[in-house]
Length: 438
Image (cartoon, rainbow, N blue to C red; front, side, top):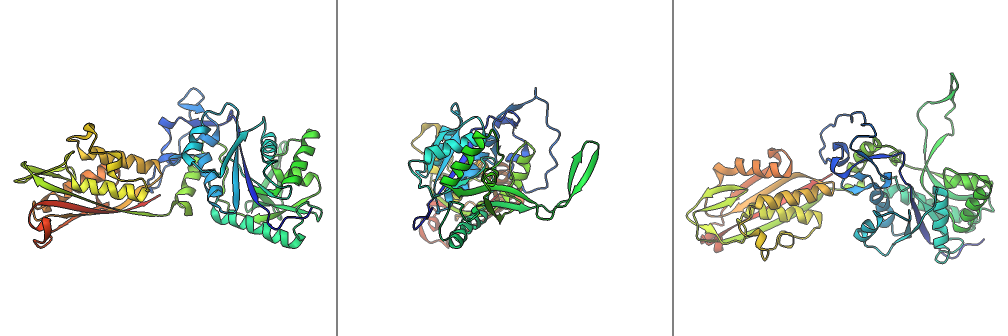
């Protein structure tokens, strides 16, 4: 089978598992290690509660992990890779969780079909779904729905290996040369033991690898291999095993040992730590600015602190320029609009509102995205009032609402040397810059 000038790459993610053996914490009772954005050393999770506890049966691909599901993390790198033409999620027929996730991802690159009783059946259903779309010599990449830590570098190396394979086989993807496709794998570095009844043997680890995913093979040979295994009554544990049954050899592409599979609840802690340090969680910077004119009143509110002044501010809420600027900075770093979109001044619910309520809601959005404030820097621009004696209280308020230490919030003030509307005492403003990290 000769390849066309360029093989397209299609991804299949079997996600129809029922999770009968996976007890996942309910979303309202997630352990700190799966949701917290703290970088402090975390204690080992306590023994998992019994079946009558708060743990609920949940398919592992839908377990919560740093503000998203395991499945969403598993899809992230595939959807971001330009060489992957489309991603087919193979779900259970009665899956009620997937539609909302698909809607939130909102990409035409994402396709869906219904799975089968086993992973093998689900991959075959994915191939049937692609039969009218993919060419027989297109590449089919299969990735576990419960491997959330696939890196862009590993996926890139796997796809590069396909180019090398094309070059060696002159574009023949049929497996006639004996070599077919590629598998991400990690060499075994630990001493391996085999239990034989009451005896234990040490296994020679030379040449032993752990098979990871993605695994990628040409459409037609993979379909043939899976159908042959099904007819023979063999339930393969991965696609490479099906190819090996036909005497075909996949190339092993060294992958990161951090590409872990979530099998039990405790694995969420490992995955969370890996994701926090991964390239997909780079630092984010945001900046915000807010200004209010002075009006009638006897005080202003800055950083949640009431400060006596001979004037108030003209505002829909309490007019706290410090918190408004800080909210805009965080929303900017998240790529999530601005304070006016989330708390419009046309909404009567926010008339006279305490701006700390806004900050707490923005902080919740940030934490839901798996991020935290690394540090925040705020500058108040005003001729008056003076804030020197209030800075510590302001920093304490902001830090409490953000869930960080007060030392990570810096507040300073400056005048405009009597220039402009601020210099004329007509109003005050604030600027904020934040750095967010995993």
